Image (cartoon, helix red, strand yellow):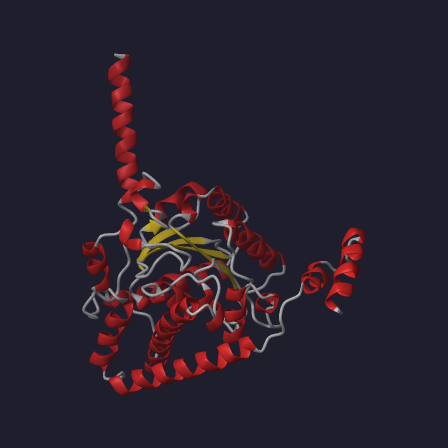
Length: 372
């Protein structure tokens, strides 16, 4: 009898899990051919806004290509490729307001740039130069977080501060599917949920945490369903569909500023390049069939077809964006090259409001050396 009861309980638990997982069906508006498949979810964006979003996506694809080349030339340092993730990155930022705060991971530099960070400073960040982390006044971003998942806790704190000030703004943060396996991920969404902090947590599920496939990271069918444990809404969205990403983030923002608390968004996306340019070889853990499957879902191709069908985009417009991106990148890297060589004393002088006595002694020693 006890054995039968236990089996019944296990079956009930399994059924309950299946019921939960069925709630997280992926939101999609544009299919791979650029056709609208969910008219009811279409956002109210003007033709000019749609064109601007496409401009940003094309520009960022060129920026990614040029950044990879600059890295190979030794003119940039750390770099995490972004091609394939333009919709999840840029459409989410496009749904924000200027007063909203972005807490990025290391792959999320494009969102920072479109939120106001000068391009040359993004290049300096890649080089490890301290000026790359000196965010201009009025640009609501922090430096990209290198520690996986730590930005989730930071976002919860920033969002709680916004709530205490009654600010009508949100804190948005990003991580990958690997970040969703970190303890900081759970702590961040749980804290924000408990205090109804105005935060938006985005997981860019690009299928691999460096080389570890998402299936080996969690037994959960979706990452979005992990929101249930924190008592907050969760949604899975087609991360290659800029309109779906925009809608998901815009609605999450509206809930947040209206006092309804945070949202977890899982964007199903794919990075076409390596995890970073620091020696990762994706051919060792990804098949060409998988790459080909996701290349057919390219967010630029999909959105381009949609806009061309509306008669508001053409090859000439795209070429103009490409040339503008190339010129901006050329100017920005030249400006980054003009930054003064970083010194040890620079790091000492900007680290503390009041320098500790032991560093003061070292500072004097290094200053004397640098003056020679």
